[in-house]
Image (cartoon, rainbow, N blue to C red; front, top):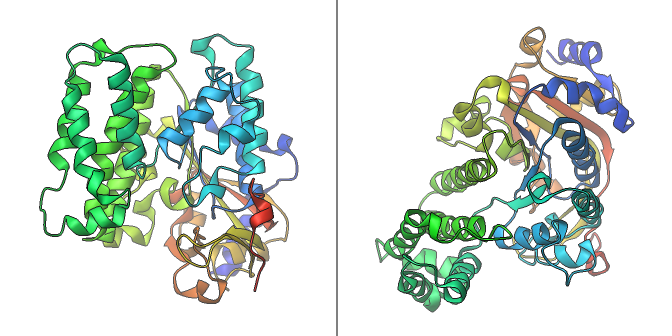
Length: 425
């Protein structure tokens, strides 16, 4: 099978060495309104720089105006305010990106992102508010930060119709857990409802009185999404101690819901780019995740839109280095990525030629790339010694993605705090 697959790759792959080589992909995007850009790790320089190059061309040539990333909403808002000129205090992108201080901060607080953020700021400076590009975090983790944002905003503005006590009750409900999600999660094993009622009532009140808090600098959107995060984060942390599948689904449903809220806020014609790991943007129904009842953003967005409106791009590498950690919460390291496992998707791509390449999938060639095959996924926690036991997701590549970008040898990205990196042992 691998010989025929390698032959198909040779026949259909295009060399990918310069930004001009991305033209075929830009053309293939067509009239899509949502472009999902993946990555096979959260610490590979080329995945960031390639997505940045693609995003710039989608913005300048295709009119995309929303960049949504796998990060916390409050942190991303600091970056959004920087690139839109709302915040005059921050002088450099590096300062704005320091808002990403939750582990793993290197995902967004890195030099590759700083270059893109400065480009976005310069791009926006020449445009009116409604024509500017926005930068938003769509993840679910910022429970306490988001409730605090809601409480501070309502305390400051006191919009008519919204009961401030609802925000105070929600904040007070979570206060005993000292901003430790695991403490709240464990407590809900004995408290069936936890703080569900408080955050649900808060979100319902804000949605009911939306017209009361429309304001400048996207304050209305900020309030609404932070309330949504609070509600869904509470569900996520409660599910975390009960079921990995349930908590995964709640998280990806939240990210898809936030994407839809962004589109609703910016208008039905607004075009949106999403940066997330392959495991989120590559359709879960074309992987073995479906056997566990797991869904993801890529699957949900495809199901909610017309086929031609969504375009998903997967990423992969054969070997190199990556930023990751030995365990959750540990200091990051530069870790060697070994050659891909034999017979995996990445190994066959290498077998077909040790060069960077682009593959576009369509009705004429999709069947050639749809046999089940292991597809490497590296997370923020990574141990190469155990890679064969959990880092390969059985996938139908051409159904999971609409295109695939392969970088044969990659290098670790450069965290803004790179001087604190722990070397390989």
